Length: 580
Image 1 (cartoon, rainbow, N blue to C red):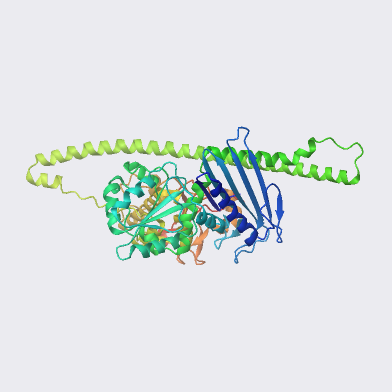
Image 2: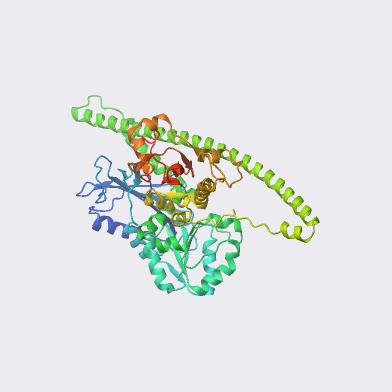
């Protein structure tokens, strides 16, 4: 199951702290969830049929002592959700461990998965949103917990003076920290306390998964003077997510810490910002290598869980079993068979992931080879053009003052403007390109901003494609080119700027002949292109191969009808034969 929440924190290994955690969790389990007690080494059931199972163990050398409670319960679906066929079980694991001279507190929440049809016909699978469990908040209010040198507070803390910036820097550079640190700066027209309250609300219930700080103007100026020169700049109204162990003196390190632009925070709906911040942390934490001591503990609990159903099978069978005994043995065999099925299902899932990973590696290798070849050719072209330019400038200069003035008067009108920082900004700026018309669903495109792992390269790649389309349309209008868009891109010897990634000009026959998949690719166009207002678009640009997103841009050369290129879709990978 996919994660909906994760926190890994530590505290001093005292009896008082251990008792405080267990007491707060027991209060939640009995008062809110309705269990008769917090079990010690068995399962209990509440009135709604949910189960809470306890397990514990101590290592042979006594160096590790651990407890784990597993809650399995049915979750209520969102009000809009109507797919009754999907499982509704959610699982919460709560692990306490005394190990490595620390008290560890580890919580994982695995919500049900929602499966539904989006408005554009695509099948969507996503984890049901879950907040921070209330018992986590109760425990953090009771027991002093730490994430490295930082405390997991629920609100964004105000950094009011330069004197506190160095303390913040020590938190950012802490390699022992597990969660991310969100650092934002108040806009110039907003009091920092008000801004801290607002971003706390925007971030939602991520206590334990991330820690937030808000810089006042004076502290922001000092932070940017100290660390902005190395690329870790934070503009007013923006937010940067610092991963553990930031190297604030290394400009290359700044690329590791995602920046959320001020325009995104200002113009996006609160729900979108909350998803952007939360999804980024969930993805990172789900891929995180948990501390070795917790990996050892997790393996031990998993091993015991898998072997427990088989324990009774090692007992000698009765010589003359009664009907009741036979029923017990049949039940044990069924449990054993179920465990075997689980193992086989897990094996199949891992094999599928392995195949997918190998496929991605092959594609990435292919893309890497292509990029290397293109970069090598580009370097050669640049070197040749530089030599040619220098030669022509010397020749013109030798002709006298007029020639010298001409040699240095060239202005490159093809120099592109700065790249958009987000897909939201890209959609705003595409209206500046008369040779391109975006007719797709804006929401599909804006959702890409929620996948922070895509990085800025994906936005840059999209913008380069749109600029190429616009240049093509301009060349056609000016009479400098009179063939198709595919010819314009495939054979760029016409002298116009072409900077675009690898295009798939068609889909497979299976996709084209499947009614459902074909319907998803019937995308909006002007009535001058098709009176129905929609036409089949199969040409598409691969923007990224990030698993679970793999965004694509679908387009059609409609210049002959309307004088521009139509982009009918920008968003996550559409369904195909592999997803159905």
